[in-house]
Image 1 (cartoon, one colour):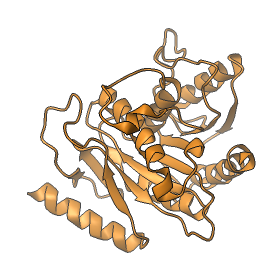
Image 2 (cartoon, helix red, strand yellow):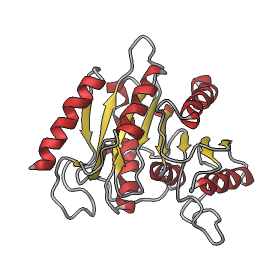
Image 3 (cartoon, helix red, strand yellow):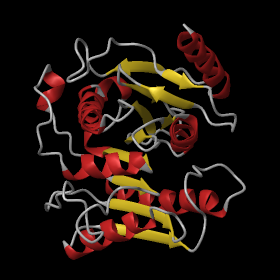
Image 4 (tube, one colour):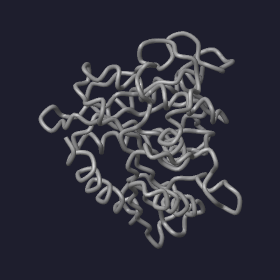
Length: 285
């Protein structure tokens, strides 16, 4: 009961912070593949008092829809994957606040509530299903299904990289017409990504298969980030495979900063990402 009240408090708080009309679209109409627990609202972690809203458990995966002002809408979409080590979701820091930023650039944003904790395979299923659902509803949201990308932070960056390299992998049995569509993202943005260097001797994680169809990738990282090697390994592998990649590495900035002001890394990556989006997404209409 405590989690339910916390969820509705979070909902009311987010409505006040982001007044535009939004909807929640659940990914799995009946049974969530591989999920043993009953569908429940996301559990909110109330143990920390650091101005970050965290989900501690998700059993009913969904996307929260953020619509831009029609006057600046550009017809492109981004699925946003918050981080949290596949154990929690930093839902505002790396989710709703990112969606609001994307809206200001004209993008329709979808914050992904993927399964946690410790459900890495389920998370990939959720990401693939989310991309397909967004494409299947492209007319409803007036977006171009061929301009549907993915973006993630930390573990969400890992999930975005996995979705961008495992789109030919069938992770679940099709359930409706959405699953006839491609789950390959049109582009990917990895912001301080983690877990991409888990191969032998800190090489590319074997799961990340770099075929010729991997989409363009933007990566931002700092040298003092404990997971900094992930970005270097991923960028190097993409370069060696002659795949399009843009890497930015700042000397310092740490990890887990989102885009909140007061930290140089948080104030730098959005400017670089906006320029990359303009050149690689908006510039190819």
